[in-house]
Image (tube, rainbow, N blue to C red; front, side, top):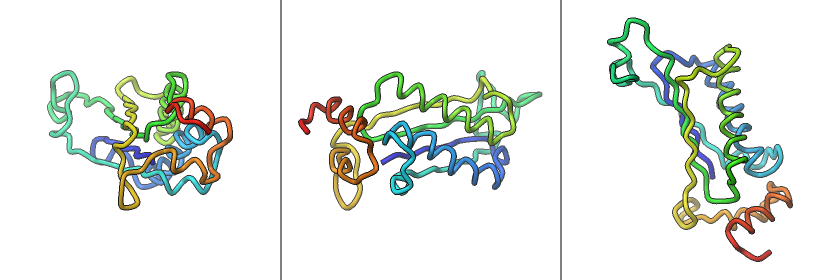
Length: 160
């Protein structure tokens, strides 16, 4: 249902940070998506960590390995199945993700060179369980709050 990909320079995020982020980034997206902290929904979330060598990342047109003082570059890509994702919910998720990343890195605030991208996959463009998956198939799972179900149905223009 949701894939969160964290890309950082090799060695930037250690195992303790990855453990913390695996859980905290899941929660940062899960709660706004389903409307509550729902342990049963956690299996629909994947967090992938990608480490890149300093000669495979650049900012300002210069590779990190060529900079006197390399920048702290981290990108987080969030891919979700189409549902009710108005701007204020997407903004909440982005703020949540940046805050959890700062916590895991022991920083008081996110770095200005950390970027989060939020991508919504159109209905009919998400495959799982041996076929194409719709968010509508998941609404009866018991993890979504009634308010989220109503918002999702309205966003997809589906009757109850």
